[in-house]
Amino acid sequence: MTHDISPSSTIKVAVCIAPGSEEMEAINTIDILLRAGFDVTVASVASDGALIMAGSRGIKLVADVPLVNVADEPFDCVVLPGGLAGSECFRDSPLLVEFVNQHKHDGKLVAAICAAPAVVLEHHGMYPDAIMTAHPAFHDQIPAHRLRTKRVVFDVNSNLLTSQGPGTSQEFALAIIIQLAGKQKAVDVAEPMVVWPNMHFVMRDEQK
Image (cartoon, rainbow, N blue to C red):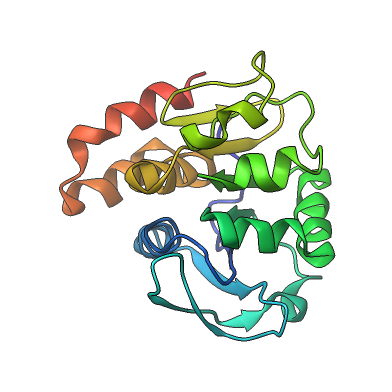
């Protein structure tokens, strides 16, 4: 089910990053959502409010603003990249947890990948009934009856999108586009990127 957003409105997405966030998951998602024409805000969850931080492989990531500056703003989607250290920073930030919870309660799309579904969402019991996936190293932290091992999983009842890791980050970003703007928009973005052969994963999982 595509999220109910007026066609004339600009879709706003907050991509949160922290020291140790996985670079491919953050950068691929930001890049692909920008290609879709979304208004993307990269928000720092660093405890010192730093806007420049090292990712999980030491690559510098740059935020637009500290999360505290936009914590009261409504977004159509909140994205949590993985990376163990980055996910632990998210987990330990009361502001980030409240930010995600508020958007969940408002019925907005929350999208998490890699370690984040287990280390953040499952740790705090944010989606106790939702099916989800995560990096295989974290599957044991998700109850077996709710765990799915597909590359991208969308729980329509919870409006929760999860994915497995760096290698699924393009599909993850395209699945976000499907939920916020429809399949055709995702196709329009994917074709010039020459990732069309991978789109069947997104299309199939979106139907679940």
